[in-house]
Length: 294
Image (cartoon, rainbow, N blue to C red; front, top):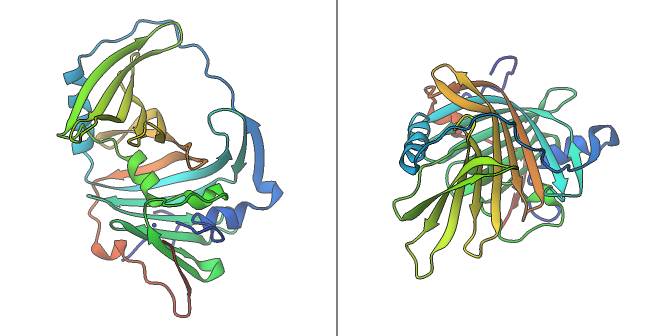
C-alpha cells in the first residue's frame, strides 16, 4: 500500500455508535457533504448485442471466481445515505481505503482521514464477527457481521458483509436452480441469470446476476432474503486488467433495506498476493473503550 505506513504487517455499529464511525467522524462537517437527486437511467447504446448460453455465462462466473483467492486493493470509498433508489441522497466525503481479502471470508479494511491522512478506522472480519477500531475515539467496536436490528442512523448498518458480498462474484451454489432471462428491449440489453434456492420446503430467489449484452461482462449482482426483499444491489463498471485478472474498477454497492450505498473507485489491485496471518490480526491499544454489539 504505497504511501501508507499502516501496511497491515501483521466487523459495525450500535444505535449510538457508528459502525462506520470513521465515515461519520470525518464527514459531519458541511464541507464534506453534498445532496443530490437520483436520476433515472438513460437509454442503452444502439449497437449490435452479443449472445451467450446459460452454461457459458455460468462458466464465465466460475472462472472469474476461481481466479481470485486473495487480493490487496487500494480504492477511494464514498458513502451515501437516503432514498438510494430514487429521491434525495446525502453524499459523504471520499476517503482512501486499503482492503485485504483472503478466502474464505477474511477481510480487513483501513480508511484514512481525507484531510490529514491519518488512520480513521481499521476494520477486521475473519468469520461471523468483526472488530472496528476508531483511533480518534480510542474505541473498539465488536459484534456480528449481520444486522439484527436496523439503526435509524443508516451508516451504523454498514458491516463487513457488504464488502464480502459485493467484491466477490460467486458461481451458483449446488442447491441452486438456475434460469436465464434475455432482458433486451428499448431500455435494456442484458442477460439475467437467476439463482433460486431449491433446498428448502419453499424455493426462493437467492441471487441474480446481470450481464451486459454489449460486452458480456458482469454488470450487476443482487441478493435477496427469503421474503424477496433486496439485501444487496451492486453495479460493476469500467472493467480493467490488473496483471492477468480482469476486475471492475468501479463498484457501486447499494443496501436498500439498510438505507445506504457505498461507491468504490479501484486505483490499484494485486490479485492473489501472498498474505500473512498477522495481516488479519487487529491488536487494539491499551486502555481502549470496548463496545460489544448484539
